[in-house]
Structures are given as C-alpha cells and as structure tokens.
Image (cartoon, rainbow, N blue to C red; front, top):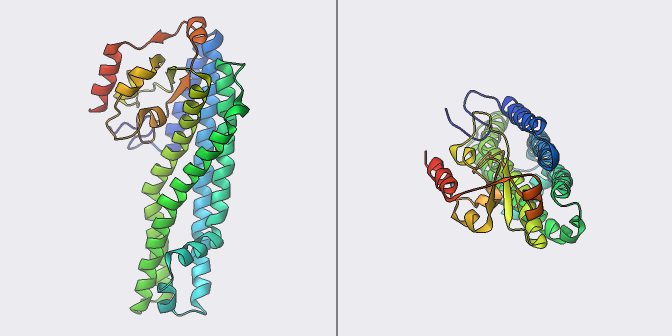
Length: 302
C-alpha cells in the first residue's frame, strides 16, 4: 500500500478525503474543552482545503476545453506555422484569455476561504490574536502561491502541450487529430500537476499558521490530522503531540520539503497549529520527546 496521508492506490481521492474528515471529526467528538474546539476548527480547515482542490480541478477542466476551442478557432484564420512561432509571452496571453484566467480567479477565491478557516483555528487557540495584523503577509503568501501554481506548474505544461500539437500540424497531421492529441496531453499532464497544486494549497494554509505563530511569538506547534490507517509513519509518530521550534528543525519528512509548511509531504492532510503555553496547559497536551522526533524521521524513510 502506498501511504499518502489520506491518499492511497485503490482508494479514490473523494473516498480518501471523506475518510480523513470522518476520522478527524471522530477525534473532535472524543475530546472535550479547548482541544475539542481546536480539532473542530481543524475539521473545517480541512474541508476548506478539500473544497478548494475540487473547485480548482473543475475550473482547470473547464479552462482546458476553452483553450482547445480557442486554438481551434485560431487555426481557421492563422497558419499553424505562424502559431508555432509565437513567443512564450504570446502563448501565455492566449492561454490566459482562453480560459485559464478564470481558473486563476477560482484559485484566489479558494485561497480566501482557506484563510478564513485558519482564522477560526487560530482564534480557537488564542481568542485575543489579531488576525488582521498579518493580512499583508497573507497577501504576499497568496501571490507567491498563485505564481508557484500557474507560472511554475500549469502554464508551462499547457505551453508544452500546445507547442507539441502545433508541431504535429506543421507535418500535416489533421487538425482534429492534433486537437484530440492536445486534449490527451493536457489531461495527462494535469494529473501529476494537480498533486503539486494540492500540496501548494495545503502549504499555503500551513504558511499562514507559521506567519501567525511568528507574529504572536509562539514557539510550539500541535500536529493535528487524521490517524485513519492510511497515514504516513512520519505523521503517525507526531499526531496530537506538541513540537517546539527547535524540534521542528530536526524533523525530516524525507521528501526534501520544509516540514513546517508541508507536514509529511505531498498530499499530506495534517497541519501544524500554533499553541500557546496556556493552551498547552489548559488542554493537557503532550509534548513530543526526543524519541518521538527520531521515530518520525525513521518512519519517513520507510
């Protein structure tokens, strides 16, 4: 079984997400007091992330169809050779105007919903925390995340697919065959790209928590998320434990990714919640020991 913190071979994404939400909800129902409120807030944050992923996937599917239609219309008046000579900037403009621009709007809207859910999570830990004080940093994170998704992932794969199809046309492949191949290429590329995009969305949420903890001077983080049997060994070792900032630096998810912003790595459904000393005491939370850090790092290698 390939464990992906809620994603595994043979289990659909929808089923895996439903399983993750159900497990975290069960944890909340078994808890009481401050920790129960925090876990309930985390459930809503997880739902917001899942909703964001689904909305973006739908928007990308729509954009793909509109881009192919726009290219088909362009080919009725422009020779394929001339289209092939477009610069990357010109090709990017075509892609954005054809439909990807709407997908960007959807992505930003979903980021806003994730931010709102995180605000509730932070208030469950520290009602006095002023979320508005970090809005400039959140805006910067939003731009950074959007650029990473579109400029580094989506636009390049669409450009490559379109150029390959235009090259087909220059060697007299029928237009409909070339467009059909373009559909296949774009769809195939989106599969792996969506994993990156979903990781970026989760990373965006964790980055907000990191910014909030720094602004509030908080140096402890509670690792929360499902423990549903399809969870990475790295995550299993840390769930519901408090890790301090020094221990955080020692953690290694063995994927070359920053632990504070990616948790267990790609597709991870767990998150770091900044917690104050008062909250740790009130909720009777357990602090991670050196052996827990070692166990997590060892588990990441399996």
